[in-house]
Image (cartoon, rainbow, N blue to C red):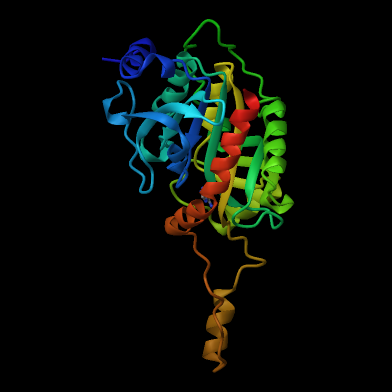
Length: 304
Ligand code: ADE
């Protein structure tokens, strides 16, 4: 039987004390960024496995709980996804975005989304936090879009405008928060995020393509959540933590030249291969998680 959102909302509320039942801000914690739970006061968590309609996250380093509580010095009621669902795990997009629809129905008006991403921009090194100002949705443009199908509510626009998808007012608050926290200028950048389906990382040729069309960071999540959050009328802010650099070779090494040099008795030094690893992604996430946590908390404080 298909679960309906109202029964999911009813179940969630039945697990919470009254003061946490109507969160104002939603937060999505990306790879290695679920430590945010550590600063939520009066925290109540509900495992995804218990929530009707939710899938279970299968990615190492991701938790699978919805956390409710109060955040910041004014105690703003929040709901945080500790772990998200990805399309590459085999979940249909309707499952990937279900928690966003549920959080909207619980009453949030803003959503702060975080993720780990690879950088294609030589001016954006590993460890930078990128404030996303636009996106390119490769699967979306090719027909894999969570907004396809019958409208889930008559209040949703059939043809969603995305010119202001990434709230300018939230981005302003983010830079104000960074100033108040005395973050160095180089800690933050602004950029365009490309959504790819994954689970493989990019080939060098794909890296060259993405960079040539103006992509700054690339990742396997977030955009389906943004699309649905905007459809639900939420204000959206996205922070991408650069955990690795996408390998863009200055030129391809020629295997033919390598073999010919060897046959001619010359030595040939093979350049070291650069390979992205999920462990690398998690290690950078751990180091910068504290900064993201403080930024998210300060933005929530500035909102209230
Ligand atoms: N997430 C982290 N790094 C990534 C990359 N290079 N490509 C896609 N998703 C990523």
